[in-house]
Image 1 (spheres, rainbow, N blue to C red):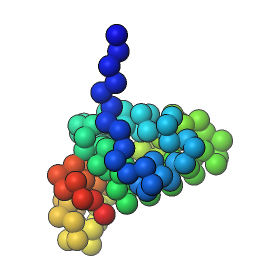
Image 2: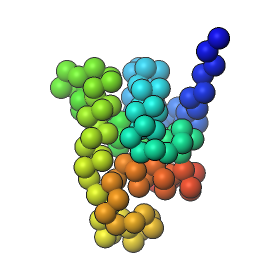
Image 3: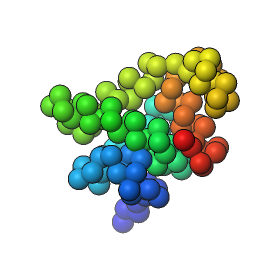
Image 4: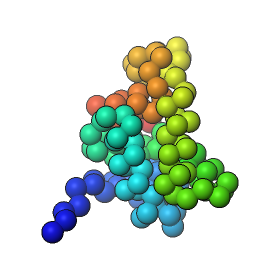
Length: 119
């Protein structure tokens, strides 16, 4: 028997889930697993990130990939690569306390996991 251990969204109206619309049920577990694998952060931190304002922006990146003809898996992977390429800059570091130079995705997943009220 398989038990689902992937945390569910706590923000169906907004964040990643709300932005993904009808694709959310399929995209959520894909994004949760891929982000956790790449960042090395726990699923609860990934859930907090995806439920946040930053999760909405991440979903926009996934939707861009889908608009370009990519599958959900490929669109999530492309969005992850893009967000891992971006680095936390001076202003974001000052505003959030996330160390400058950290990959954007890793920084915000950790930040949201610690804060649980991520903007």
